Length: 412
Image (cartoon, rainbow, N blue to C red; front, side, top):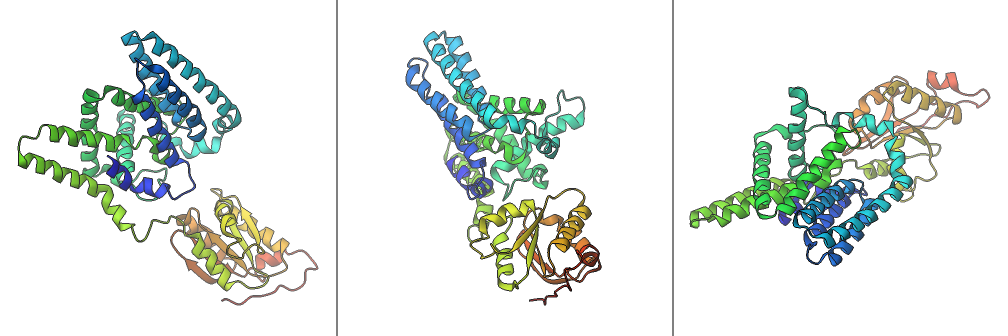
């Protein structure tokens, strides 16, 4: 299980990004650990761990509330079934601590997210259809299960919000079947662990059905440990039933095959780590080929990354014209170009792209219709393109009167 987690390409990738998704995984594992060590006979010590990790986890990880719900229900029902009323009292206290922490977190941060229509629209396909009324609705749930398995073991790089072709291949189907078998074995051997993991998935799906949380991609990365855990139980069950050397060697072969699933992409990125947007190389190109009077054009998405590195590349002095990327690419391009023409008496324009790089063609075509590309650099997920719009008919139309003749620049 540890090897599968350690080799998981998507977990390795997100551990290198300033993102919350691997922290979601850590909080989830910490909560499960605290739940497993909680003793109905000696509840005090375990309650302190649950209260502390849960209260802190709410602030560190948004989906931790789904794991907390699963942990609370499973431990509460267990205490009631065994009539362990002291343990139930401690669990109620823990629940109150969680509720206070969640209330404060909601007021300070989550409330603003709940009303964000842009996020809701972006993830609209990721909400569970409920009740499922047709084949497509049921297919959504199958896709979600296949997507979780693929995410846990096979996904490389950024986990985008759309489906991946590998979800529906034979290997992923086999991995999903083995995961289901492993959960069945886990339910017999470690019923508390199995109940928490399965209920965490169910609670997340319920939130998705209520349009409160998308069940897709990086947002469900916190559930990824369920897959290697279940596969580990499959292998352990195989070894426990081993009747001879050939049977044991079969288990070794299966284990090696499972390790190859995340191990192959991990080896591929050993020397050349996955880089979704190599903005540094594009910025280095601008730095090495810039001239006096140059300025920059970029979307607000690119601007966020640019701001992090601009000082280290000596680009602090370049004026930046940022635009918010919308579905209307023509408006984005021409409205920004109009601002450039009105604000600068001349000089060359660098277009820097590092976000949604695959959608650059439309923007470039519109800008090329106004001026030729003087220089271009394209790397992994990022590019820099040099234009001189100062003498273009579009710029001359919008240039303020009395600014003088435009300056022209030479390509580097």
